[in-house]
Amino acid sequence: MKKLSLLCLFAFGIVLTQCQKETPHKWNDVPDPTGNSTPYEIEKGASVKVDAFGKITNEHGTPIEGVEVSLEGKTYRTDAKGLVQIAQGDAYKELAYIKAKKEGYFAGSRSFIPQAGINRFEIMLVSKGSPQTFESNSGALIGTGKALIQMGAGYIDANGNPYNGTVHAYVNYINPEDPNISIIMPGDLRGANDDGERLLETYGMIAVELESESGEKLEMAEGNPATVKLKVPASILHRAPLTIPLWHFEEGKGIWGQEGEAKLVNDTYIGEVSHFSTWNWDVPFDLTRLDASIVSGTTPIGGFDIKIIRPNGDVRTVKSTDHGKFGGLIPSNENLQFEFWFDGIRVANIPFQTNSEEKVVHSFDVKIPHPAVISGSVKGCLGTNVDRGTVVVNDWFLYPIKDGKYSIELPYVEGKEFRIRAIYLNGESSPTQEFTITSKTIAIEDLSLCSNTDTEDDFSISFKLDGVSYDIKGLKKIVETDSILSFRGGKAALDFSFNNEFLLNFYKDGAWGSSNQFSIKLFENNGYGAIQVEGRERVSVDNLDVVVINRNPYKVLFSGSFIYYDNQSQSIKTVMLTEGQIFEK
Image 1 (tube, helix red, strand yellow):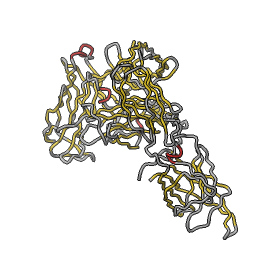
Image 2 (cartoon, one colour):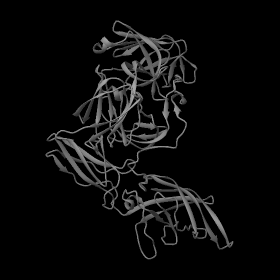
Image 3 (cartoon, one colour):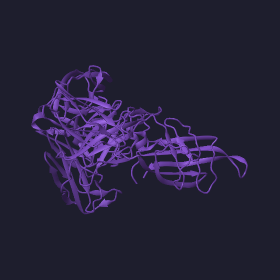
Image 4 (cartoon, one colour):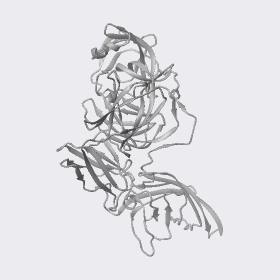
């Protein structure tokens, strides 16, 4: 059955909405899958809805198709371009925690503070490769890159039972100087210890996964720690402290928890760990929350990757939303440099001094030098401009559609090639258009979000009347005669607008007639009309109250009740309508 493009009932611009005020969640309300969880309490904030657009690649930068991406229990999958779209996903005001996994790769994740607009995220999955093997009762020296691990004897399975046999160890060293570290490492450099929430500066990381011969997850037995030796890169050795805290990534929470420490011996940190996930050698420091926007004059502009550079050369990268919003945690009391990049081109470099304030709100005025202005319109199935949506440039940079039109400023590089398409985040996507910059003003042909130029949609409607199930199928058309009311609905009729009425005529055998109409009005609870199904008397509606439970481009869920006069009993009856669904086949 095809996904439904039936209704676009959420205004696309409202992409981050806070739910009713509630008791704040804590980091430690979620058990860590490894069973190794620290008790630090940092508030995640109230529940919110978040829109997100992600890209998943391997260590060579190649997109990975079919990656399982999850956010708060709901699962999505990447397409052939390694892209994934999340519409109105569940998150928290202070944390969106997205996980990615695929067979043959180390698990990946990304944590960020949600911003208004479509939040972009990027995860680079690293191949597990071939395992290093040793016997469980003897241990071994394993490692990769600049990390060596002395494994002891004694291992347990997921149920806590002793394991005897060959141990398969997968090891991934994460170099702090890797330019891709911000998309390889799990979560974000955001941790917690006895001093509360902290920002982290990494000196290296290591991920270890242990498995039995049959592929079952293993863990070190109690009293069998591993000794880890991590060599510090020469370029940062001069500022490496003699003692550094050890942090492990808490997979159930999306943050780093402090546990233990390591000593610097010559150019190598040496420390013990009692379990494995991903371990991080980090110096914690004070943080400030940044709530930032990017404007050109007074006009918000999106489509940037932002590098935040500390005085010591440490770099962290964030991404703007389509609305030009970005933010998160940044160092306190430092003179930072903010570099704004578009597709490998540095557009601006702006200094920014932070202080000890808990939160800073700032607007960065970014002017693209010698811009090329790209403009056009986005149409729906009836050829009219869509009201909401997003334009994607080079499959990564996002710009909002306003009143069916877009105007984008890109860095002018004559002869540079670009790709452009329009998306409705939880619905249709236009075909990609390719163009080359040859002048500073370029008009693109109309983009169409409609993959169906026909006026017909094939729908299935099901519901229960007083507990009796009805399933109504048939091809529905947009028609208008003296005896049949106009049908509105589906991607062809709504045309990706959000201010149209949804009106549907149906009968079980597919016949049409004005006596069996059923209507749900957009953004309103009350409908009107009548329902007739085979095997029972026509319900003449005097009072129809249908409450739409959930509406999105995939399906409409509804329930309700209405009163009618029953001729057989000559009495007024109330009919309960439950489990109503309208979706495209």
